[in-house]
Image (cartoon, rainbow, N blue to C red):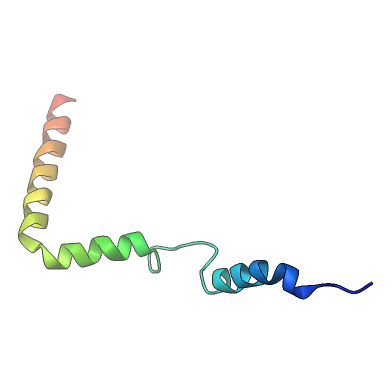
Length: 65
């Protein structure tokens, strides 16, 4: 029986493309986290403001308890 490898060439391309991507992402290699970190570096003032807002909100929740 002869196998037609050209019939499955699209599948081989998909497998080859996915071979370079990790099966599971960690905190070190997650693309979404890297984008967030890049944004944080570009907008330090906004990050500081967000941190202050979050801290005040967390303190208000603690006071309610």
